Image 1 (tube, rainbow, N blue to C red):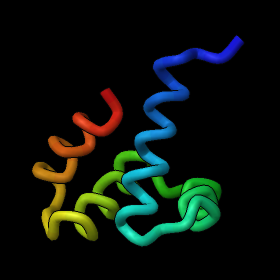
Image 2: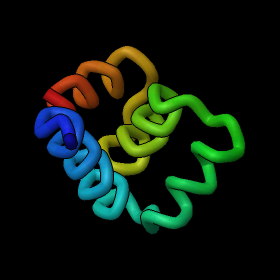
Image 3: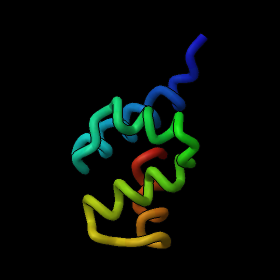
Amino acid sequence: MENPSLVLAISKLAVAGEQAGFTLEQMIDLLDAGVEVETLLELIGLRLYGVRSARARSLASNWVM
């Protein structure tokens, strides 16, 4: 059985990533290559908002909650 919260979080990550210019395939490839989810969130935050670590993590927490 799927966890609705997890499905929603992944959906939000996918939407944010696409808004930042990543394709789903690129995000999956990054994760498969060993990039941590936190790092992917920072990359998305950097592209969307031009921010780094602390701010990106803050924004990321809003995307996945």
